[in-house]
Length: 291
Image (cartoon, rainbow, N blue to C red; front, side, top):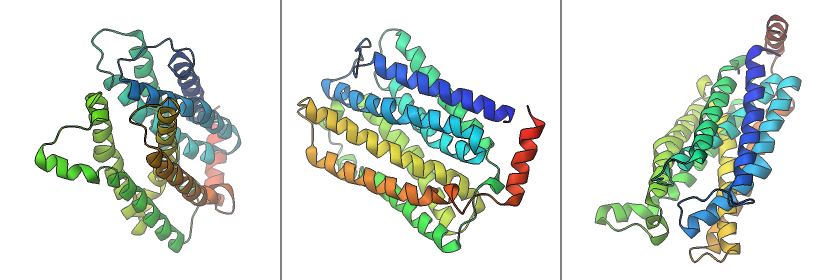
């Protein structure tokens, strides 16, 4: 196990613990942290923290464990939860509009920095030779699938185009927490969609650089629809006036479809698409040289 892998495993394990602690302290369980949120956003936070506790934290631990067994697989699987945590905890720090210094902000900042460190360590630790070679047709199908993920993300904001043209007021749900709304808007359309489009086009054109980020993008699109569905379920269970069961169903279906696509996309990592002899030789040299 290389020094980088040791640091990555430690970062992933610490990230898992930090996510679990944050979920336990928040409104999901202990309710020791009171966020300056509307009741709607509080309900959404409950759903989000449930996903962080039961899915994202275990995913981090599984990736850390795999680093000892199949290094390339552990590194690849470390990217989605790290990117997810970084995405979410920008919102945790910026969204609440704190007017006082709160200790919980330091925890959220630490989680963001930790997730960023894990993301960088995982990214830099994946040699191109460690990724499985796949048929060109499969790569093109993957590119189409990734572009459809981008289209789904964009579709969530298409109804807002007319409102920008008319200068309409934010919807009541967003108006109660405008900074949170705009932080999500910025991250989705300023970061997620451009990256996803670039990766999808890169896969369609057979660009080698697109292979590595594709695993992160596809994995990220598994976690986020599940978390947003959980937010909607928490709103519906708690009788939130802004709950929309139809949206929960649509996002639930999307989560199932995206998870199925991710399973198809990741399959070569687990089976016949393992890295070739040169990649295994490189892994062996890394393991024997950095102890």
